[in-house]
Image (cartoon, rainbow, N blue to C red; front, side, top):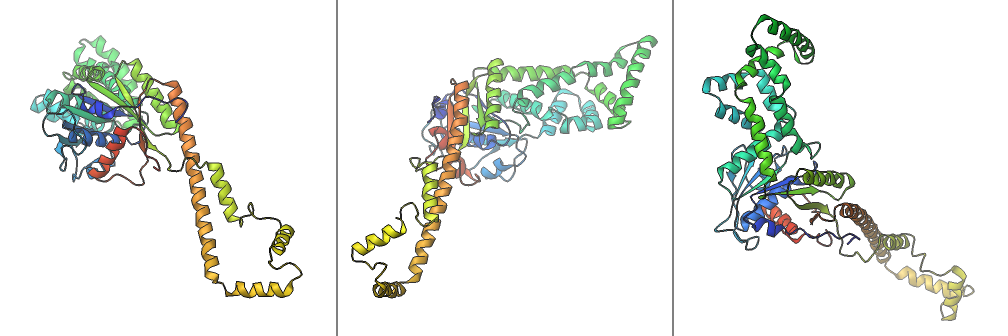
Length: 441
């Protein structure tokens, strides 16, 4: 371990606590958030809790790992969950696991359909600007992830919700984007577009027309001449709904601050990922959001940590260069051989006899020994590389621990392949609960 050994994250205690209602797995992209969220869901369900995992994963690995043909915007029961397979938790009765994949456009459609009459809803859903906004506007995915979280929590069908946050460029987007989208939908731009329908008199309309002309010229160059008309039609149809977007975003934000929520920052033992994790830890503290700890994925270990990289490399060189470290110099070796009755330099007849003996040896044995030496040297070099990786990861972890000694950590061993079934997710869950990497990982 490093100089700054962090406290171990008690994952099972977190999962078993009935007061824990929401676990949010957050972090930079590519660090294993989806696998972590799925493994936590499986372990919690097999310890007796009713769990739903909400994932936002374009690769759809979660569906494959859970044995479901496809995930969509509706929670689906995951087969194969075995009560007690992950130890006896504190849950009442048999655990269940459901999983779903966020469909951000469908979630946006559901908001419209539930807050507008049928005729207005049809007009909104058919509007080109709405279709563009709901399918790919910056921040929409993060906003809808929080919207869906609020919907799941309100249903109260599950006693634990595990959220896999969107694969954003920055982990902080999950907290920032909903506010940005809410501000846009309730901001000055929308109010200006709504103004023509609300401001009477020629003077007011003349003033607005000047501003509209300027905006039309700019927006038309960027997105086409029909954009403004689509936006105005969209705004007119959505007029009564705009205030609700910010209200719901604020409500979900407060839900994330509540005692029943626990954030797990997921990272890999790499400088960029842990730097992002440190930013997120600091941001959660600033927002007064409950941080449970750090999950450090893909940590490497070794069964032979007592053999340093330097000694392994030296041994490999010794084997590859014919054992030069161990052999004696030429004359001394010959003299020593003569002293013990072996043929010396002047004993030509005896040397000839030795050659005859050597010729009788099986040459394949010599080749086999050379092959063994080469293989052994290769393994030693691989071990040296592994020990260098371990040392580099430890230095990176030590830097994080020195900055944030209060953060509990669970280290998860690097696996030799991808997780593709429930057994693999159980294995990840066991490593999460152990909190330390297995030797030789």
